[in-house]
Image (cartoon, rainbow, N blue to C red; front, side, top):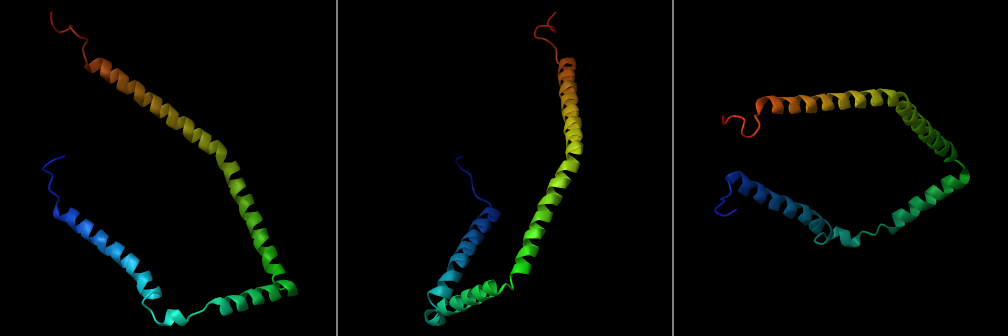
Length: 126
């Protein structure tokens, strides 16, 4: 398309897109490259302590009730989803059939209107 000029709104959108991209790329840069405190930060001791704590809890058996509750909740949730799907299946079939009937009727009405409002070629030249 030649000769197309951009509106002010298009220019503003493009400018704000550039500002957003610059901001999204600047935040990690200033947090991790320009920051002096990040150079001294070492997450390995904290991760090691957390892993040891989880391992001690797992070995002592304190996490077993929470684990069993999570597994039971997952089974209940999957049963609820399956039950709802089973109960709604007949209604979905009925709705799909009604939509099919409406679509077919609309197609037939459109075809009838085309037939009634147009004339064959040469019918008017008599």
